[in-house]
Length: 246
Image (cartoon, rainbow, N blue to C red; front, side, top):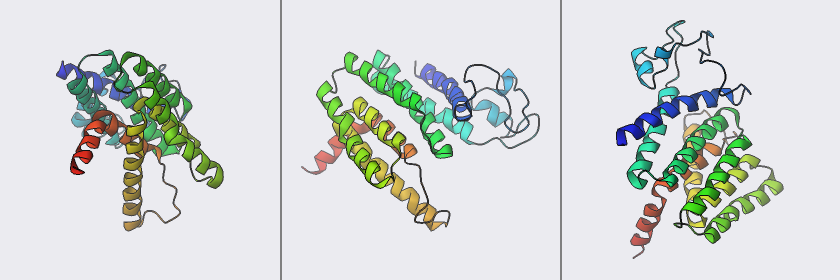
């Protein structure tokens, strides 16, 4: 079953790459065949094996020789890793399916936000529905904790967005639905992790002179990555921190 979880993660990960490319361009995600974004040539079935095709083709298009971004196999591998860890920790349960859907959505929205600085509302809706469904099938997080989590970060961020205009509406919505998913404790940890990661990334960009103090950095990828961490290991992180306090 572990191998099966990885294989499913790889296949779904390949589809996630399609979503990342097509959704911002308002192209159908289910109709049409895959094609090379450089030469437009329709790809054959043997060009579409997750990760393996990239390795066999040495990262080049079979038809025009254009370089294939290493992000494609990275997305497939990351999604497979998430599915593997979900199965290892949670087994084959209905909640595991919800966790898998949420992780895949977070990967896609992170890349879309990174590329285009937008978070399509469809992902907020999917994560929100997943959070409600999870609330009915598991009691690990109470409904009160979920409701508090919905407002714990999103409400202060909404106020800051209205006052300063420096926070994106998509980030506010993402914190709201992820708070409903995780509960108030883990959404606070998400806020801490995402802020630290964003700060480190910004400092690194300035250090290599690829960004200035006023350069706009999308926050969605850091939120998404931190939510995945908290979804998979948040309770252990909190318990470890509390153990350090004695």
